[in-house]
Image (cartoon, rainbow, N blue to C red):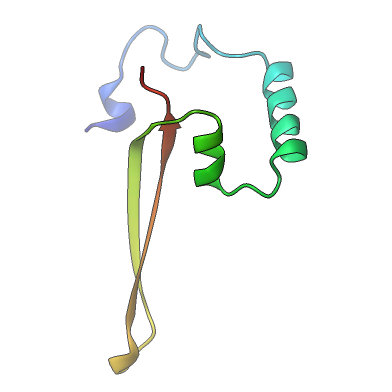
Length: 83
């Protein structure tokens, strides 16, 4: 609800204790680019076992003018696996 303002503790401004090494992150990203390059975000999330989406962000914009207006809605979120 409050975003970054709501999180105030001694670890503020420091990397997470659970942060993954950059080498690991690069390896995973390269694997995804090579093996799953034609996957969209939804298919990739399903393939990797995600079964829920958190932190959903909805955005909208009006496109066109006059009587030809359309409403474009986009959403994004973080795919996670709940057990």
